[in-house]
Amino acid sequence: MRNTVLRNLNPIIVIVAINVIVFFTVRLFPDLIGYLGLWGRPLFIERPWGLITSVFTHYDLFHLFANMFTLYFFGNYVLRLVGVRKFIILYLAGGILGGAFFVLLSPYSLAIGASGAVFALGGALAILVPNSRVIIFPLPVPMPLWIAVIGGFIILSFMSGVAWQAHLGGLLTGLVAGLIFKRSSRYFYF
Image 1: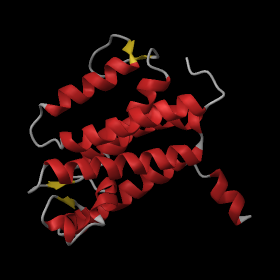
Image 2: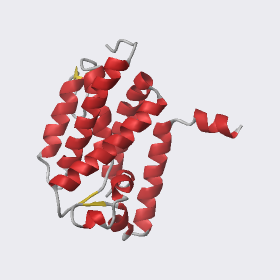
Image 3: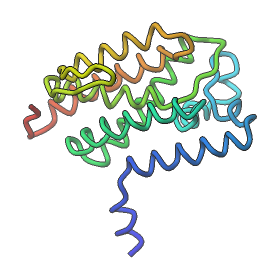
Image 4: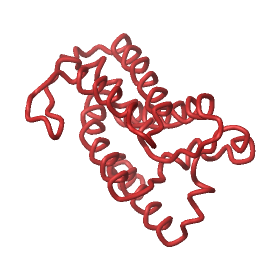
């Protein structure tokens, strides 16, 4: 019975739930951001768990909503294409490698958020289904998915307070994973 319940859980819903719980916990105990966030060098050595915990920690409701909204749409598409196991590996690898890029390229800062993991999903989709049409708010114009992902990366990279390093690490992780999934699959992604 228990195994059946666990098998039927949607990993996206579980990830969203963890993020929401962590968000409201941090609202109650604001000092937790310093412990859950990812610190660049030299503090990274003292708090390496931030590579994982930062992926589930968000600054404000908009930050949480933007990442979870994108996770929901990209994540469901990736989940259908590659399955639960590969989805979870990709999501966590994108978050961790995005964090590693942040630590290497931004030595004295703090990062939080799931953007590296979400960009990994977008990067994989940009390889697996590059010409799928998507509409990105606020532009009411359908565009190829790969343009939306790369364009989103470029636009966000110029915004202040955005950890573009984590986005880059996640995006590169997703692009490589997409190539691996495409080569090892018997299925045709269109």
